[in-house]
Length: 383
Image (cartoon, rainbow, N blue to C red):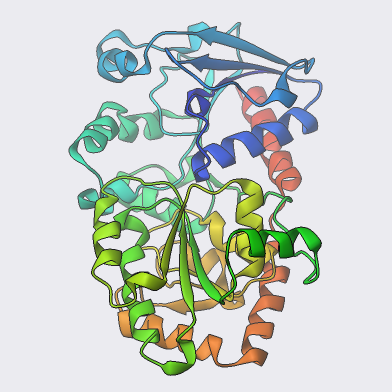
C-alpha cells in the first residue's frame, strides 16, 4: 500500500498538540507498517527539519518543496492545489490536520480532525485565523473524505451534529501518550538538580499548554488568587508553562493585575525534559480549558504521577473521567475550592495520583498506530 502524507504542519517545529500527534503517530506507523510505503509532502519556503530518525527509513520518502504555504492558503480553492497528483500513485492520502488537500478518486482521502473549537468559539481566534479556517473549506473536505478520524466520541458527535458529516465516515481512535513522560523517583538526582537550578523551592501548581484564551488560563490565575487568601498557601506558586498563542496578551494582563502576581511565574516554552520535571514536581496540574478535542497535557501530568483538575466540558470527562477532579470552567470559586480540597488532603492527592497513572497507561501509540493501519488497509481494499 502506498500512503501519501501531508506533513506541512511540521515545518515550524512547534511542540503543541497537533505537531506532537503528527510526529508520534507517524513514527509509530512507520514501525508498524514496514511493508507499506509512505511519501511525505513537506512544503514551505522556510522550514525546520523533519525528525532525524525518519531519514534512512526504507519505507519513507520525502517530497521536498519550497512553495510558500500562504500561497496555497489563498489559491487552493481556485487552483485546486496541492493535490493527490503530487504523490506517486497513492492508494491513500492522509491529512493529520485540517489543511486543504485536493484528492481525486480513486485515491482515498483520510483526515484527522483534532477539534472544531473554531465553530463554537470564534471569539477565541483572531480574524486572520478565522479566515484561514474558511480557506481550508473544511466542511466540504470532511464530507467528501473517505474517512475522518477523531480522538474521542465527543469530537465525533460534534462534527456529525455541527457539520453534518455522516457518522459512518467518522472513526474514533484515541491518541497515544509519549512514553517520555513518566513518574520519576522522588530522590532522582536530576530532578533535585532541576529544582535547585530553576529556583523551584516552594510548592507550585502547574498549567502547561499554549497561552491563549481558549485554555481559560485567566480562570486559573483568578482561582489561584482566591486560594492565596488562605494563609496555609502563602508560599504556593503558580507556574504557567507554554508559548504565547492567539490573543495571548489577555493572559499576561490577567496575571499582572492579580493580587498574587508576584507568585505567578511565566515559564515560556518548555523543552520535553523541562516539562517532565515540572510535571513530576508540581503539587497539582490544573487545566480548566473551555474546549478540547482530546487534551494531552493532563494525561502527561498523570503519567508523571501528578493529580489533575480539569474542565468538565468537551472531551475531558471522556479522557480523564474519575481519574481526576472535574470542575466547571466558568466557576472560578469552584476551581479554587477544588484546588483547596486537593491541596489540603494528602490521601486525596495520593488517590488521584494513583488513578491518574492507571488512566494514562490506557493510551499507547503502538496500539493507536495498529488501528490506523487496520483502517488504511480496509479503505485500500474497498471497491
